[in-house]
Amino acid sequence: MAGLVDPANLVGTVEIAKRLGAKQHRVVNEWIRRYPDFPAPLVIVGGARVWDWPDIERWAKRTGRL
Image (cartoon, rainbow, N blue to C red; front, side):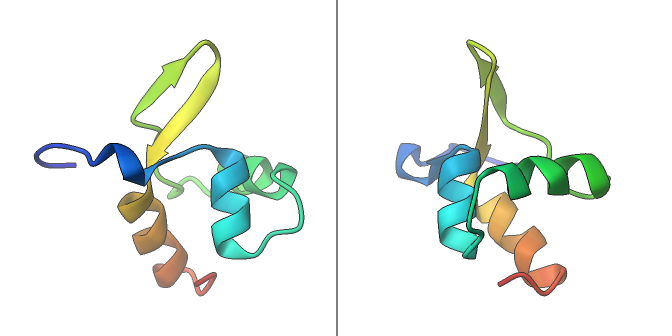
């Protein structure tokens, strides 16, 4: 990640699941465990992982999920 992050692009597992058409956010947790190339979260706040959507979007396009 280079530069500033747009707060509107911050997503958690629920938002990732919705944007990628997964029925439950648990699917995202499974992707995190199964795929070592899944993007690392930007930050963990109170135990919740937060990603920058463009990072997830690139991964999803590269892996055929978007």
